[in-house]
Length: 81
Image 1: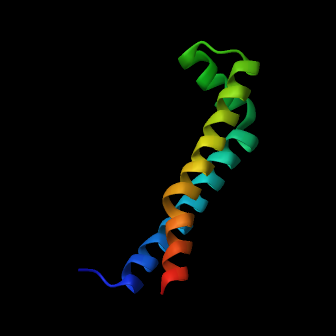
Image 2: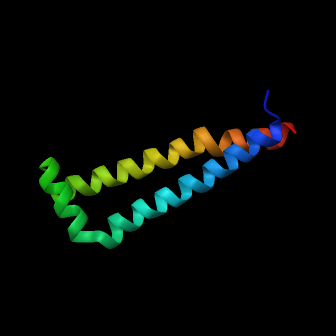
């Protein structure tokens, strides 16, 4: 059985990895601008308004997932130890 310290470290690193991933994705969407929107628009047949909505929903769900599956368990492990 893993120690609580090891599991806490796992969730801590998970938070860091997810923060890097969401920052890269946000940067690509924001700074990539026309290149990213044009590529996704052609791939999926979406206009700019639909792409903006889809990007926002993706980022919101990803952040919610980070909270549910990484930050909350990490915090709970800190509270019980």
